[in-house]
Image (tube, rainbow, N blue to C red; front, side):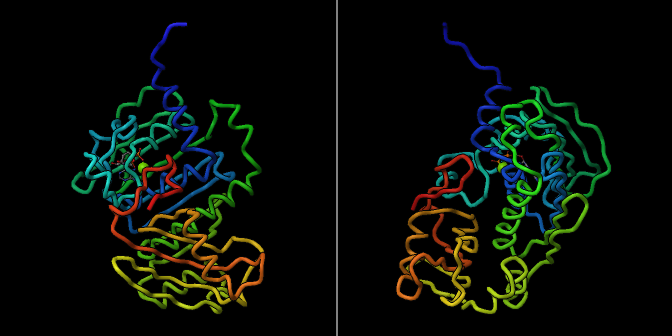
Length: 311
Ligand code: ADP
Ligand code: MG
């Protein structure tokens, strides 16, 4: 066999293999894009566990008509333009891969109106290479991305989807993590037209604690201590559950590094050690912690879905 260049559709589907594991991965990428666009209000609509539809509407900066098709191309991004930018990236996205990957395995529509535009525009893509020409749509400033029929053209992957309820649970978990790390953003999540969370903007400690209680349960908040420490360029804030509130599962453990939810061995080990003397073996602590440090001290370009970081 001679060497040949893969069709770009297939390249995108291969990339989707890393970035899109299930509907929740789509929700993650779309939410991160909305947050990067400075959204203050997010409307999330999910149908059939995200298999039928995931739609996120934001009131962020919007996308210019001329950029809509570009947003769906591979390696196109407005977030970085040099290695220097990459090394100190503060946006949640930067790879320019999410939208083309998702579009290669679903039917995707983006409608958007940029701040300075007097009109919204919409393009469609899905399962093929070409993006439709923009058509005018009624749209407030901001962006709405709808992803229908995930994996419709990749049956082998569709087979691995779980029941709607299970897939929705993953989306709900994702929305919780986003909500815990973006107090200044209002979030409304609906599943099959039913409201699951309606979280108003949480300014100030009292409202933040109210949001944490809504997401992690009132018992956690009632038995948590606030943390606020800053040493040598590192700042750690959040809430740690008292040892009496320990759990059998690690389901109430949230660690954010510079606003990004991460699963990091170093960090979980540090927390486990901190609790070592007060927790019975096998019990899991509950915590919501935010570590802030110089972005150049963290490498976020470790994993395509950015679940991991390197210090
Ligand atoms: P990345 O987020 O890594 O840049 P994506 O494929 O997720 O790559 O998105 C490509 C580009 O599309 C982004 O850089 C951004 O300019 C634009 N974009 C995507 N979603 C939104 C949104 N909700 N609001 C504004 N711009 C968006
Ligand atoms: Mg992105």
